[in-house]
Image 1 (cartoon, rainbow, N blue to C red):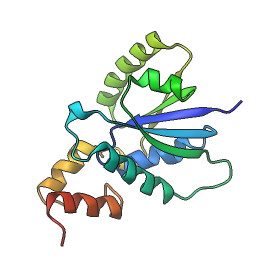
Image 2: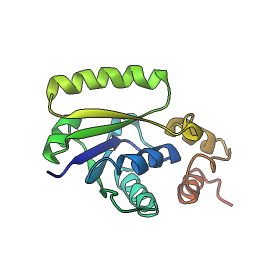
Image 3: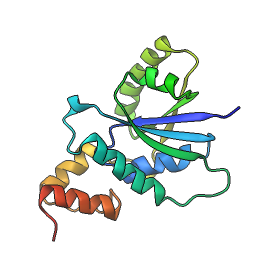
Length: 168
């Protein structure tokens, strides 16, 4: 039986922490779907289409090996559990950085389990070097002209700099 995993998020923008979770999650399933949430209520800096394109570029650049899952990146705008069912995911991957993440994620897992007990949630801790990275903070640093090159890939860094008008 093919095991499909779902890694949902806003990815506004995609960070090295997100890519760390993708890199490890794809070793645990046969297919990994990265669901880019439209989530316009969060007021994203980048459109859904831009975030999907960024994630696709970054995933394509990840090194891969035998046994790594096929990775697909696509947008979604429906309730997460409806989307997970539609793509036939058996597991949802979530990244954790700190205790505060766990409290929020724990509430989400409880609600998701009430909606569908068949879909498991697996938490992957971000690598120690990526623990502090949050898209919200990356955007704030970039907006104020700070260097975010240690938090994102060079492509994403350039995209942020261009968006904020801080490119060389």
